[in-house]
Length: 185
Image 1 (cartoon, rainbow, N blue to C red):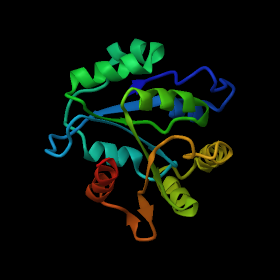
Image 2: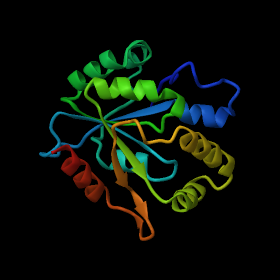
Image 3: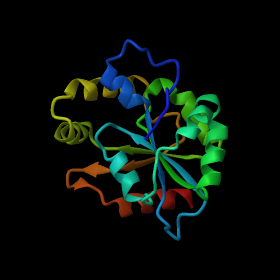
Image 4: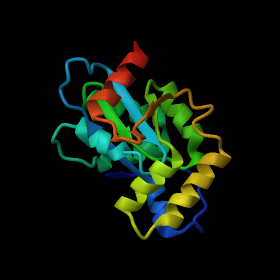
């Protein structure tokens, strides 16, 4: 996992757990899927909807993190994207449940050619999935959701919105991937 400081707008007074969760950015070089050519994808969305699970399902078994890219992330999202693309044949998923205060960074990533995908679900289903994973961390979920609602995300992100979790459970990654591809074509 490549740790990025995110952006200076995240107040350091936030709970350390929440702040660290917002800081983390995982990079996943993608499987050699024939249909996955020249795609840099940012997977974000509601907490608990399966962002990391989707990204891991698509990845090559390669060693990460790439701490050498951390200075580029801090300096310029455009240069960071170019470096990641060059190192991995333009097939990378960025897995980042970013804090809403970093919307400008998401727009920079998008401007550099990254496709933004927002995974969503009914909030009650997302809460239940989050609590299954982190049973003692409901306050973190609630705080993240309050920030997302206040920022009216994903509005303004120019994102592909994909339902990842419904009353039947998590959708298979192949269905999510197909929906992303259909939206890109």
